[in-house]
Amino acid sequence: MGLDEAILAGSKSVAHLTTILDQAAQRDARFLFTRLSQEQFDALPEAHRVRIDYDPLSRTGWFGMPDPLRSRTRVAVVAAGTSDVFVAREVVRTLGWYGEPALEVTDVGVAGLWRLMERVDELQQMPVIVAVAGMDAALPTVLSGLVSGMVIGVPTSVGYGVATGGHTALHAMLASCSAGLVVTNIDNGFGAACAALRALHALG
Image 1 (cartoon, rainbow, N blue to C red):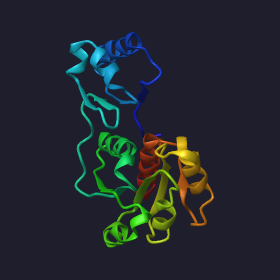
Image 2: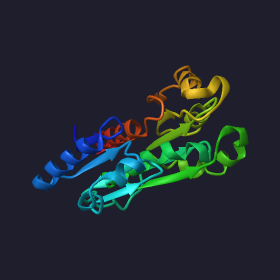
Image 3: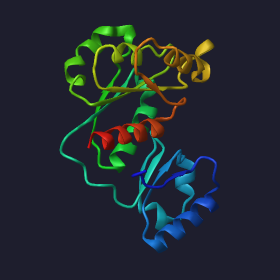
Image 4: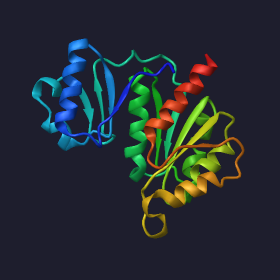
């Protein structure tokens, strides 16, 4: 695949995570943690905690050194609102693990379309854009109609009422009339980053 192993921490006990880390340390392995809660991280043995670069917002952890950052930025991560940033940061951190810098653009949801239009020229230069949005999730459709690069939509669970849980956002993206828009599962920033990486590998 060209992608390293990632450890989904959310469903694992601290004892299980500690065993994984013990074995990884013996092999001098490195990997990316996803869905690693603050409580899980705090409960890990100190010898392991000091080796993990932990980001509580995205709930990601880097065990070992990430790939060196490339000089050229080829991916933009665009979040509709600041409430969606926890997912956007998972995208950015996953890309960063593989040495891909990201242009982060936040709070450009279509309810204030002028904010997005102010950044369109910059976004048009990106081969791949990950668009993160909850509520009605119109951002990926609008953005996909404005740029020629690949757009990956990530619905978030942010919202209330009929938008609760992100299903409205997911259905809106899947029903988009914008040709070629790719959509991940709800809150799946990690999956979106991996899709972006695969696209970049194809580009060479």
